[in-house]
Length: 130
Image (cartoon, rainbow, N blue to C red):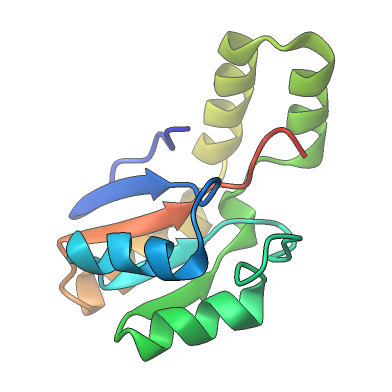
């Protein structure tokens, strides 16, 4: 899943499906990530180690910053329509429109990126099959 936002510095996406928490954190460290932005509306997971508090603790113990920014996630009606139609073209079109409506909130993320002098950030996209 790609998020369509241009920001100061680089923006990456990553999911955690098929990974254990340690592997996930290791991938972030190997990539030189300094900040993880979790965009899940509700940062909870049935997968051990990926609920908000557990993930936040692991990220911070590894020397990175954790930020929960649920407004960047795909809104429920858009995800529901995807489940009903399986039309990813329409999903990304609707999601792009939603993201473009977030100008004020995106500015806050851009400022955070500049303040931390980041070259990159990670965003954890929620699994769209939930």
